[in-house]
Length: 180
Image (cartoon, rainbow, N blue to C red; front, side):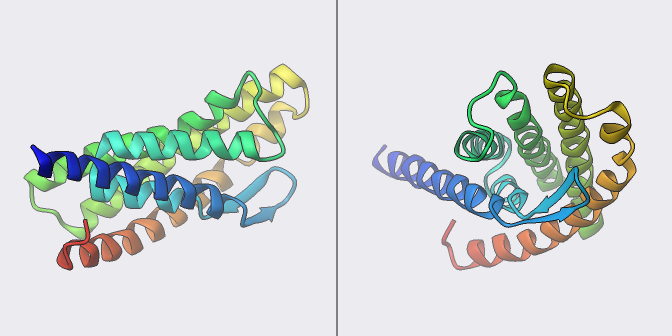
């Protein structure tokens, strides 16, 4: 019983650290035009989902982006939760894929494919949040929202593949040294 409490506490602390890392990494953005910004925040979600599974991935993704929205220039708005949904979905989907891949042969190809698919879903949900936000507040045209969709998806594929590759190395090293 005592060991189980210790494990739960350890995971909660690690989730909190990964949420903080998400918020911190979200401040480092590379602008591409007026509407696109690439950041490294999703890396914390990928590490969490790979290491701990879908529930922790969902929590870190959703709470990380929720806090980023509140602490950033946008504050709390009616669409804040909608903006947090894509990263929560990324963590949930990738965490579920990790459960399925544990039962089967965990090849690098299937692992990276899972990372990329979860990134594509997150990017599509992010585009939906941008669309809803632009309709509510009237700041972007449909062309600006959907005209860059292929670029957004391309960036999602590259970044998700990179994050997945690096996260797998980090999580393997942490497990080998019994740190998680």
